[in-house]
Image 1 (spheres, rainbow, N blue to C red):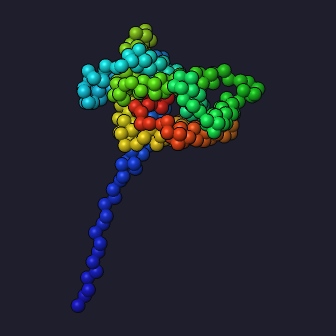
Image 2: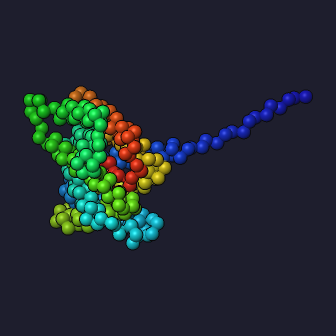
Image 3: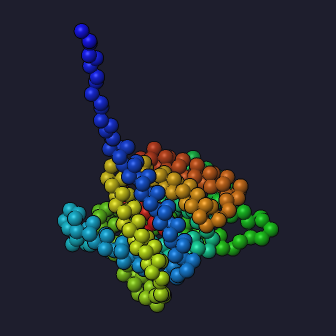
Length: 314
């Protein structure tokens, strides 16, 4: 009599909330990297202010839809306790996006994002005078090491210094200030309110300037513009989902994956060059940034905050 061996049932693969959140975050930064590549393509042919205005019109519609579904609805999300602070955040970010696109087209994706990697270091510096936080000697040491990496990337001692590198430095400082103001606003306003003003205030502000830069776009580039808007909304949706499952300290380091992906896109698709000092400097900055984020979490200062976009992500 033939004996039949019992086959154990297959166990379904179940993802934990943490692994799901990390998957959302990684997918979001991958989409943002593609979006930056499209921004560079369009930014070389059309005014960055015009491109940003179209992106922000689409993004404003997205944040209104998200706010409408939040607790209390649109009216609650659009009623801040500190309106001027929220408006200032939105205007500052839209200006930073314009600088980012300009930097992508003039300086390059790789060089821009290696500088952008220093954002957590500048945030730590600004948090002392603006937020009243205390930064210990370990984080100050990490900040110092990180700025050594920035000097390696900038390479001011080369025979012919490229002054255009100042553009991403300005963009990094602007985004760091935006991040600090977002932390400040989170003390009195809900995350839904901060997110609403991130898109809506920026869209209103750039609409006063953008129409003066209106340009004729070819049908093919209108397709790219549509993809740009779709990637912005889908990337932010995934980022919101990631923040709903993970603390900010777990999500923020994922943005360094975007730095690597953007550098690969710049080299492979746009024939950009990653010099040895850029690679080493970027590695130093990323290491210092991750250590700074970790120390901030260890000190108990990092709390779940509203979704904050990586530089140039809208």
